[in-house]
Amino acid sequence: MSDAILVTGGAGFIGSHACKALHHAGLRPVSFDNLSTGHAHAVRYGPLVQGDVRDAAAVEAALRAHDARAVIHFAASAYVGESMADPARYYDNNVGGMIGLVQGCRAAGVKRIVFSSSCATYGVPESLPIRETTPQRPINPYGRTKLIGEEILRDLSVEGMRHVALRYFNAAGADPEGELGEHHDPETHLLPLALKAASGQGRPLAIFGTDYPTPDGTCIRDYIHVADLARAHVLALARLREGGESLALNLGTGRGHSVREIVAAIEAVTGRAVPVRLEPRRPGDPPELVADPGRAVAELGFRTECSDIGTIVRHAAPWFGLEAGHVQAA
Ligand code: UFG
Image (spheres, rainbow, N blue to C red):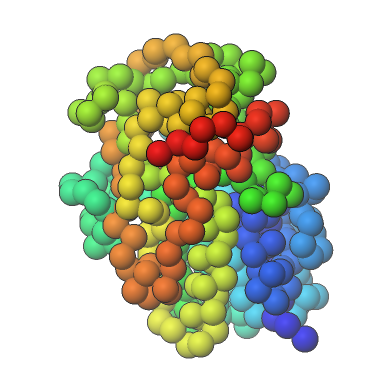
C-alpha cells in the first residue's frame, strides 16, 4: 500500500491543494484539522481527522491509526495583522502547535516533517532577492512563530528527525481544474479582495500604502500559484524519503509584482475594473519581498509551472464569479 501522509491543516487553502497533489503522486493524504479556519468540504482527497495539533496524544493517535510515515505541517494561524494585535494567540497556536506535533511524532516514531514556513521569517530583508542565507529577522509575531518552528525542527535533528522547511512567498491562485479555491474568513489577502471588488461583491480594494520606496509606491510581493506550491511538498517528501538531509527552501518565482500591477493584471484578465481606495500603510508590511528560487531548483528540481500572474488570476477569478477569458495579462 502507498505511504500515508498526515497533513495538518489539510482543510485549509494550501493544505487542501497539497492533498490533491499527494493523491495524484500515489500517496495517501490524511487531513488533520480542527476546522477553526479550514473547511470540511475542502477535504476531497483522503479522510479528515478532526483534531488540534496542540494535542500531542491526538496527533500520535492519528499517525498510528493511519500508519502515517511522514507529516506535512500546515496548521497555523496565518494573518500578519492579527498576529500584531493578538500575539499570544499566535504563540499558542503556532509554537504550541509545533510542540504538540513533534511530541506526537516522537511518540509514534515518525521522523519526517515538511513544514510550512514563510518569507515573513526574513522581515525587511537586507538584500534582494532573498536567499535562504539572508538573515531571518522577522518584524511581526507571525513571522517569529514560524522562525521558532524552524528552530524547533533544527534542534530535533539530534534525535534523527529530518525536515524540509518551505518558506512560502505569497500563495495565490486556485486549483487549475476548478475543484478547490481560497476561502478565508475574514479575508485579508490581496488577490481575493481585489477579485471580490472587481466582481462587485466586495468593497473597493484598499491599497495599503502608496509611498513605499518602490517604482509605483506600492508594496511588491512574489506571488506563487498554490498548485506549484502543492507540488513542491510532494518533492520535499520524496527527498526526505530518499534519506536527504534537513534543509530550508524558498518557494517563490523570483519575480515581484506591486499592488498596482496586481490590480492591472486582474483588470486585463477579467475585463472588469477593480475599484480602489488609497489607504495608509498597513503595520507590519515590508516594502518588497522577492525570492531567489535557485536553491529549490538545485535541491528538489522544483520549478514553477503556472505562477505567471495571468495564470494565477485566471484560475482564481471563477471563485469570485468572474469570467477570466479576457486578454491575458503580461
Ligand atoms: N494589500 C493591500 N490591500 C489589501 C490587502 C493587501 O494593499 O486589502 C497589500 C499588502 O499591503 C501587501 C500585499 O498587498 O503589500 C499582499 O498582502 P497580503 O495580505 O495578500 O499578503 P502578505 O504579503 O501580507 O502576507 C502573506 C500571507 C502571510 C505570509 C506573507 C509573506 O498572508 O501568511 O504573505 O509575505 F507570511
